Length: 159
Image 1 (cartoon, rainbow, N blue to C red):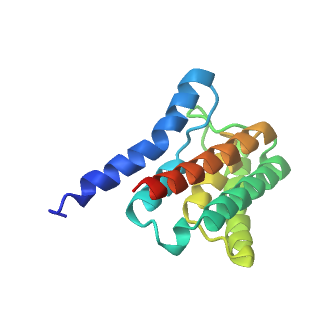
Image 2 (tube, helix red, strand yellow; image 1 turned 60 degrees about the horizontal axis):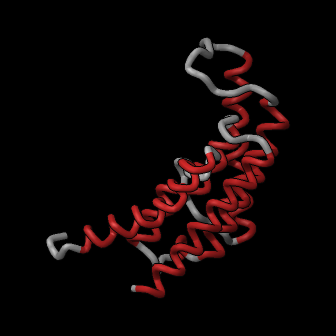
């Protein structure tokens, strides 16, 4: 990419996440989480791709949040993934099962609703592994995704 488009793409992805980073800093709430990175990347590098369509982004992450909440609360309960979790522990098994079920449910849900957005499978793991597994945190995830989609629409109009 010697044409300099990488600078524009990198700036675009960074701009998309900067507002959410400011919200995290000012509020202390988890408005920035790992699966937003791949979504911002898709918006910056493949804005016309099917996976970048607002319906797919919002729908895919919504399916991921719901599937993750269902899997986590049905299987893992109040267990949270930590570095101190011992090998072959029951809590570890419950979290692993929750993550597997969450991804399977998300894949099925996105396929059935035609909302395929690969980064949503990271969202479902974030929820399904107990990292952001409270219903309020699920709502924050969706609000953050909505902000990202809105920023993308705004940046598309400005460019």
